[in-house]
Amino acid sequence: MPQSYDAIVVGAGHNGLVTAAYLSRAGLKTLVLESRAQVGGACVTEEVFPGYKFSTASYLCSLFQDKVVRELELEKFGYRVDPKDPAFFSPFPDGRHLTLWSDTRKSCEEIRKFSARDAEAYPRYEEFLERLAQFVEPLLLETPPNVVMRRWEDWRTLAGLGRRALKLHDQEIAGHIRILTESVKEFLDPWFESEQVKVALATDGVIGTRGGPQTPGTAYILLHHCMGGVGGKRGLWGFVRGGMGGITQAIAQSAASHGAAIRTSAPVAKILVKEGRAAGVALASGEEISAKTVVSGADPKRTFLGLVGEPELDSEFAAAIRGIRIEGVSMKINLALDGLPNFKCLPGSELAPHHKTTIHICPDMDYIERAFDDSKYGRPSARPMLEITIPTAYDPSLAPPGKHVANIFLQYTPYTLSPEAAPNWHALKESYADRVMDLVEEYAPGFKNLVLHRQVLSPLDLEERFGLTGGNIFHGEMSLDQLFSMRPVPGWAKYRTPIRGLYLCGSGAHPGGGVMGAPGHNAAREILRDWKRLAR
Ligand SMILES: Cc1cc2nc3c(=O)[nH]c(=O)nc-3n(C[C@H](O)[C@H](O)[C@H](O)COP(=O)(O)OP(=O)(O)OC[C@H]3O[C@@H](n4cnc5c(N)ncnc54)[C@H](O)[C@@H]3O)c2cc1C
Image (cartoon, rainbow, N blue to C red; front, side, top):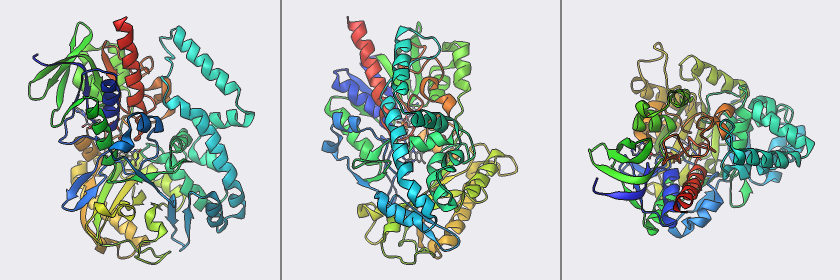
C-alpha cells in the first residue's frame, strides 16, 4: 500500500464531508473517497437536462446545524438559504385553500377560514412545539449514552438527561411522552378540529416514513422536522441558492481549505480489517490505501454487510445490523416546466406566493392513511401524497429565462413491490409517474402541458443512484426503536463500531436522517477524542 492517511472517509455525502472538514481542521491527513462522479450524496445539484439544474434528491433545508455552518465558515464558501415563505399551500378539492406563513398572525387569519377555534389554538400549538423542540434540540449534537454495555460515563449522561427532564413543566413532560409514542393524528386531534388544518400540519409526520398519520411514533417525525430553522425562525425551511449542492460544495471547499483530499469516481469495494482493526480500504479498481482510521458515511447495512463483510463481525452484531429496518417508501419526480402551474382554487400563472412554497396534494388525513394502506401490501398508493416545490421561484438561475424546475416528492411507493403490482420499479415507474401527473392536473389543469422534461426516481433508483440501501432516505427508519441510543443498533450509538478504528458518520448514526450535518459533526468529535487519548 503506497499511500497512507490518518483518516479515510468513505462517501462524500454531506455528513462524510462534515467529518472530513473537522478532521482536517484538527490536523489529520484526511482523504474522502466517493463512488459518484460528484460530491454530495443525497444533498446535490445536478444538471439533468441542459440548462435545468435540480436538487435531484433532498430539496429543502432547515435542519442543517448552525454550529457546523459557523465553525466550517460555510457562508464564506457560498452557502446561502432563502427562507420559504409561505411555509405551505394546500389546495382542496372543494375549491378552498389554506396557506400557512412564517408570520403566525397571517397563518391564523388563514386558519380562521376553516375554524375560529383552530385559529385560537394555533399560536399555543406553535409555542408548545417550540418548547418540546428546545429540549430535544441540544441532544442532536450530543453523543447518546449506550443503554446496553453501559459504562460509568453512560450512567452520568443518563443522569444528566434525567435531571434536565425533571426541570420540565408537567405539561411538557407529558408532551414529550406523547410526542414520542403517539401517532401524528393522536397528537394533532386535541389541538385542532379542522381536517384541512390537521392535514396541512400532519405531512411532516409521515414524510419519508413507513407509517401513516395513525401509526404510533409519527408524531416524533413531526417534531424532528421542527428542530431546525432558517433566518432565526424555528421550523421554517428554505431553498439553498444553487440547489442543495450549494451546501455540499461549500463543505467540500471548507474541507479542502484545511487540506482534505477528495476523490470522486472512487468506489470503495472493501474496508480492510487486520486483527480486528480497520487498516484502510480497497477500491473497486483494486487500489489499496491504508489509514489509521476509517470513517463510513454510507449507511450501516452497506458499511458492515457490504464493505466490512460478515466474516469480520461478531454474529450478534451482524444480526442486529441485518435487523435494521431500511425500506424506503418515497419517490422523487424532477420536472422542467415551461411555466408555473395554474391552480383551480387560486387561478393565475404569474409568480405568486403559493408558487413559492411547499404545495401539498393531500386533502385530508384519511387520504394519507389510505395512501399508506396500499403500501403495506407492496402497492404504490393509488392516490399518493404529494409535496411540490418550485425552486426557481427563488433562484431563477436554475433554469433558462422564463422556465422553471419543480420537485415532486411523494409517498408511498414501497421499495419492495408485490408481484401483482409490477415485476420491479424500473418497469413501473414511468406509468406510475403518469398517474402522478394526472393527479396534479386535477388541481392545476394544464399542468401536464407545461412539462418539458421529466426525471423519475423510484426507491430503486434512489438506491442505485445515491447508494441509499432500500431507497430509504434516512439510512434507516426514524422510528423510536431506531433512534438515539438505539441508532444504528443498541450498544453502538457512539459512532464507534466493534472494529477498532472504524467509525460511522452518516445518517444511520444519531440523530439520523435529513440534511443536518449532526452525525458528521458528532462522529468527528468522538474520533478526535480517541486520537487525543491514543496520543497521550
Ligand atoms: C428524494 C429525497 C428527498 C429528501 N428530501 C430532503 C429534504 O428536502 N430535506 C432534508 O433535510 N433531507 C431530505 N432528504 C434526506 C437527506 O437528503 C439525507 O438523509 C441526507 O442527505 C443523507 O446524508 P448523508 O451524508 O448521511 O448520506 P448520503 O447523502 O447518502 O451520502 C453517502 C455517500 O456515500 C457514498 N457511498 C456509498 N457507498 C460508497 C462506497 N462503497 N464507496 C464510496 N462512496 C460510497 C454515496 O455515493 C453517497 O455520496 C431527502 C432524501 C431523498 C433521497
